[in-house]
Image (cartoon, rainbow, N blue to C red; front, side, top):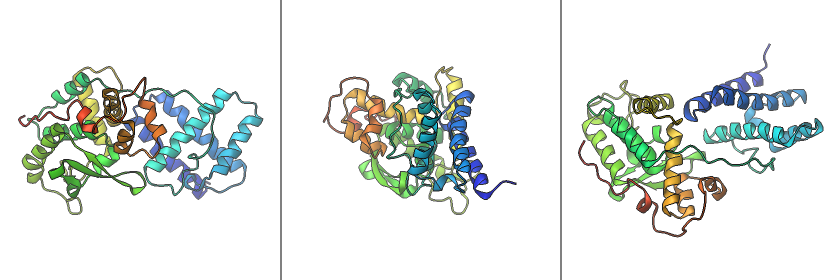
Length: 312
């Protein structure tokens, strides 16, 4: 019979699997590898006779696993593979605001090379936007969503939880509640703002919205806030329409936002602030070569920031 903590491990592992599949577009092989990494930690904790669920794991338990792997004389590359999967798992739990303290945050792990995330060229993003059928009932909503993902670099969870009072139209800013309930202000470019206003005025105002859902900006046909899966499937459908060969997900627009700004010369610390990264090292994965620091504001460098697109 399964213990309560084993059931909890399985539940969070399933949520992690859905995240890797739907939001990160990982291959089945990569997903299986990440889940095996998490299972190794789970098994190690069980072998120690500790009845801990994932949210109770501390740095000392991860260090115990690392010592165990070292005692097995496991190759450094294999250790890095296992520990990177565990790090991804806890970064997911942290992003979901489930952790009081992230056990991997201060842990020294075997170094593995950083690879730049998949990004889209500006032309590819434009093609995706142009593929949206604005005559359909959800077309203007979908256009506004993708414009905002790319204009402001939001996480998908931040997009679906965006509320009407968070739109500060007068100063062209969105108030975002990010990881660990931390608030930040993110500029929204003209293209995205105009698409958002069109959606609100021409679509959302005519929708019947269920009780308790009135404050959410993006509403489904059922009158409820959108799910991550719905946004993922919307983007996948558009990618198929334009025969895009690259893997694409809501996170792709966040990566593209950061990359295009930095390549354009935006200040790294400004991009860090907009993304909601606590450490500038997290932002540095987007840097390939030299960077022109201390340019002006981020929106000045965004490919769509000064475009209006007032007509559909």
